[in-house]
Length: 292
Image (cartoon, rainbow, N blue to C red; front, side, top):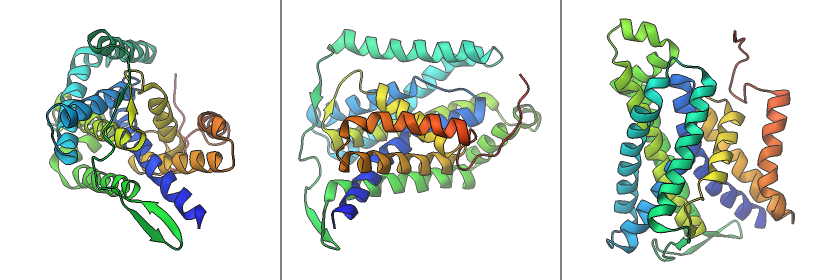
């Protein structure tokens, strides 16, 4: 059953997009900012994981935790240095700043280590194959899916069962009212960036496990695709980012399976165009009017 294998591969790929998309959608839900530097935080996470595994001989899971920690700190620094002063400015100013931060991260990395790609070790996790309804399923795909599910469940727990999660939902609903109720808005926004960036760091390590090759410009296309996944699901809606990522991954794998592998990147942008034409609010979003 080759189609089962394709679906599993699509879900594994989509889980990477979903983890990155969660950062986009969380930040947008809080401060209505599209953080286009988020794809480069994902790139940093991938390199941190690579150097932790190859340079410090850490295992996969310690490297994953280290990458998430470093990216969480980086996300807070980006928010405090680049975005905090722009909260009351125009959205175009914040958007231009986000693009500037993205380029800065990319070329700082290139300056210090060069633009040459690196290759993740192939045997980070035990490589086995399983039979499922006659289809061979790679164990790495199952590992990726399992790690993603655990992180998403943990995120849902944080958002709905913790104090900081309640603060995030309050600030997302009405920032001024939340501040009047005693919620520290600055801390809540920083926590949102930290959590979203940590998930991007995890996605970076998983991406290295899945695709092997990484480079300083690797965050551009996956970052854009994750943004498309967030828009597809409904930007600002956490379950929407998850579903959008899985759908996008499955569509890409199906397009490749039908012999149109050169169109797999184009398929994501075709989806973006269609969703903006027929349902701009996304799958889980609600149509709202906004005064400009």
